[in-house]
Image 1 (cartoon, rainbow, N blue to C red):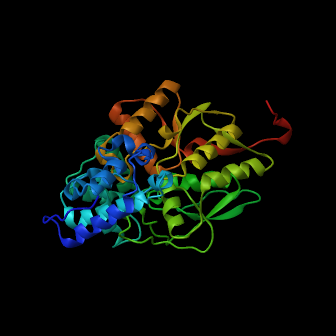
Image 2 (cartoon, helix red, strand yellow; image 1 turned 180 degrees about the vertical axis):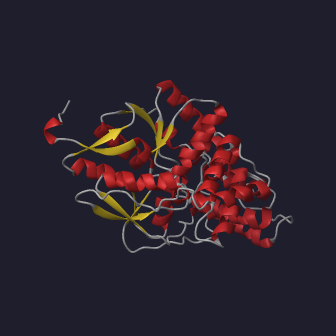
Image 3 (cartoon, rainbow, N blue to C red; image 1 turned 30 degrees about the vertical axis):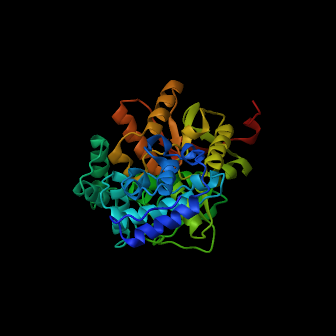
Length: 393
């Protein structure tokens, strides 16, 4: 099936569509890519239908599809393709074409990618306050206005001379037998000073000092490939964000979730036990995490803490929360179902990602669902115990 010449588009676009069609002409439309996509419930066309449109020569229909920008670049579509088509790469190239020759899509995800790229060309990290202002200038307003106002006020307060800013790790007592780990904080965490300090404090409770590179730039993920990662390291680094894990891994930096390291340390250390805030929780690992590994790691933490991890069908726990455009699109079908499941189980949601936490909290307010959403260090921590007190019960 060849792409017919379309005089509405330059020859460069037609030629690229021909190359795309050649690469995916072995697709037999099984739909595994779309059914496996963490954003699948939100898609009108999805990877399968986009490939079909490519093969049919429907250039305009492809370049006008919002679904191009609802891709979070997790790579799941490529991993599951039975014909070994690099679907994620196809979508990335289509986004580039849409950006250069489309120009008609006004979805929050596309605007968020543009705003993030513009920010990262000027500064090492995305500033949440300026990002929000830029989104509103472009006509995208938060669905959760109360949450957005609270976040904005918190950021402004932190910018004031007496805003209570505490340097990372400051006034956190060093634990006996402290191990130092190189820590990559990313963009979001350092902008919430209280949460940033809490991460260092919780790590110290496990006997871990986080050696944080003060000049580490953004991992580059929100810029959708138009701005390179601003961080590099020859050593293994520990992160607090699944997007950072994925992006750094692509640049050749070995990244490990900090929470996995803390859980493993609690399992090995004597005189230490992992404790949780409640007797059960619903896990959410985000769409950019290694789904199976991330859920398994939370399961290990739950087992060590002696609490129940409430799991429905596995893909529910990594369905996209909306990512960078989540606050502007509102509750997704995936986050809605996850929160409803948490209500059924009378349990909080625990996530390993700050952005996911904030998006899920916004969704809960929008849906008027009373569900606590906790970031990993807000839910788990290490507690000392006398070895003779520990039993197998």
